Image (cartoon, rainbow, N blue to C red):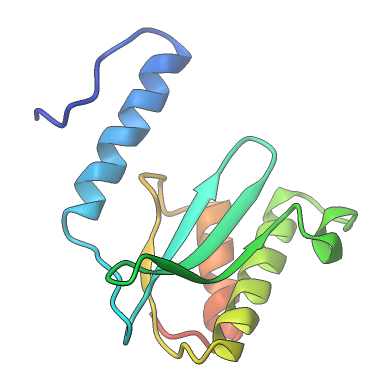
Length: 127
C-alpha cells in the first residue's frame, strides 16, 4: 500500500494512518454538481462538515461546532455532532442540494461521525 504517507511513531503514526485511509476512501468518492460530497473533519474537540462540488472546486455549504448557534450549546460531543449534521443539511437544502455522497474522511463510521450522518438524513439530505 504505497499511498505516499510516511510512517512515523506515536501521534504522527495515527495521523499518517488516518491520511492513508482518507486517500483510500477518496479513490472511490467524488462530488459532482448533481451529488456533491459531504466531507466530515473531526478533531478531539470540534467537527466540521462541508458540502463540496469537486468538479467546480467550490464549497456549497458548511457547518461547524464553532458556529455561533452551536458553540455554547449544551450536551456532549455526539449531541453537538447531531446539531452540525442538521445545520449542514439545512444549509445544503437552501443551496439547492438534495443528495450527497458521504465522505467520512478516513474516520470509522461510528460515534460522532454516524451521529452527524443520521442527523443530516433526518433533516432531509439523501445519501
